[in-house]
Length: 325
Image 1 (cartoon, rainbow, N blue to C red):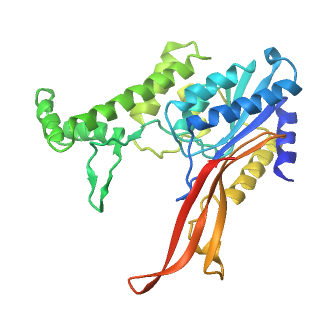
Image 2: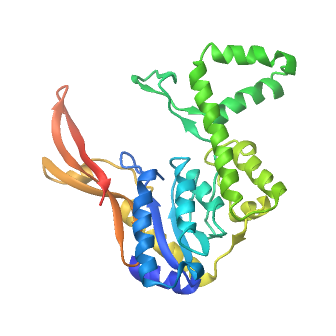
Image 3: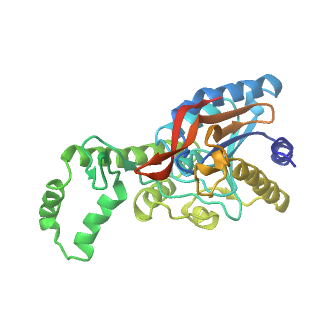
């Protein structure tokens, strides 16, 4: 079955309208959750409303695959979707990490397949005062909020630093990282917790459950890519539904359609655009927002060519356009 047939089948099984949101993780065409998708979702939702029952009885299912993205965009996206429907759920066939996990926190229900994954929300930050990359002085290194937290835990738990001495540990850190770099990282950490709380409070009333979930995904789970399976997510207090056998099959088949188109998990080399030619133009779809009727793709366009650099064969690739179409 093609994507449209699978979307229709999933809609029938969930008694809902389905929107897919797929971002790519293949460099240099990696994409992530971002604000630029908000008008696209609005267009999809407006199209659904024109053809479906009133929003007071409408259910929206969001089929999502992502490795993360902007931390604020999920709040805008969830609020937008909820303004169009009575019930909002997310369908997770595989990875729904970081900013994707925040989107899931705002859903009334989370449907996770056997391989479904959420992840911690521990942002990495870029700032003009971040340390230089020693391998490329023109670049700034990302600073991980969890790395900073773990530095202080290391000092306390393994080095035996007493609470009254922790200021010396902080002073040592500030001498090596600019204070504004550290302030920016702490701001991201606070923002992640605030956004997670806002999203959970849209449907979760138990304050203890909210605190438990936030503590786990922003502090306790200290590896950014740690996969939170559906059983672990359920233990945290999230409302997780296991799909039926048929739904599981269709969700995975739909994921594989997108994985094939974006080539998820396959290392990129410019030669795939060139084949036997010396120069070639390329067009690459790196993200999707789709419904049964509408298709929106984030497109990279450019040129790739064989050349000689330092008397050795080389390949130049220039991305000239990157936009939603």
